[in-house]
Length: 448
Image (cartoon, rainbow, N blue to C red; front, side, top):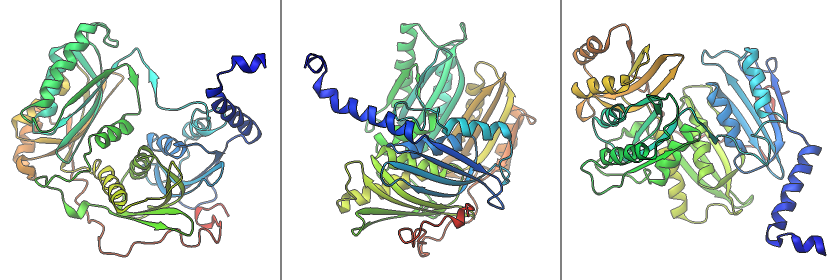
């Protein structure tokens, strides 16, 4: 009784749950099997582990961060056990044979990893190397140029940045350090000034929609954070005056399967890299649990089917909730659609480089719809997706002018990545999970 009186009884159930998870993990350690022989044209990765909310997203996140292409996937997590089977290839479409990558996958998803551990989470850490800046506001031409100019004037060196635009909104996660110290910005006054000036830029002339600037020394997974920021901003609400190619819109359907008490989500769209991550990320952040799923993306079209329930155990309860799920999944897929011309810059990094490049874009009436900025070993590799004024196609004279201003050898034109045929929206949705509950066959995944 003396011991029990010292224990906080409110935390006792949580303590018991944690101890049960530890015991379950010791008895049933996670297993990772990588097989390059089972399938003719892909590497098969199987992950068996104790189940926890969000584990599917974390596994998919590790595979996509390695730039692996997921061509097929089978997910089942009924009860306390989680089982994933992925068919993956490298960017070249071939099997993954690099021993360093295979070893990293095994360690990242195995018994000692943070992903399969019920007591730890992946993707959040403290850093002294840089400061993370999160930006959210109304999109407009020249916005990235103005933001990078402010940071350059404040002696902030941009190390990495990712910028997404969707539905008239713009979100960015930017990693900067102090030009003088080469480390994270520690001066509170400077941090406050950075936040104030960037917020002024984001507000612009739009008083209808808010703007937000967050400065932090916690680093989260950049792409997941961008999804969370735009989701919280309700970018999935359609704006009448925003043009979006209806041919690019995915076909999303949600129906309830009352016999099994699931909601069945089917998605048909054009395939592209990181499509599975974007979908699973949104379902997870909307507090839905994926119990079963089947993914087929071996051709130009991708088919995804998910059997889900809300975290409270219930399927989708109303038509309003169903419509919200559809809109949010559509938005998640559209955010990374690469509209416009793809330009790739590769050169020696320097302070103010991004500001100078985006200023040239702005002076030539180009709008940046998406950007990826990375620096490593003194080299800057930046990818921009740009459009002309009023969403027009960029003409060759403008491109030639920009290349002469920036440098013909360091700026390459990669073309329009999304001009290929879209998925017919009136085609019948495939049922990928037919027979799931009659048979647990893994023949299609090369395990038999």
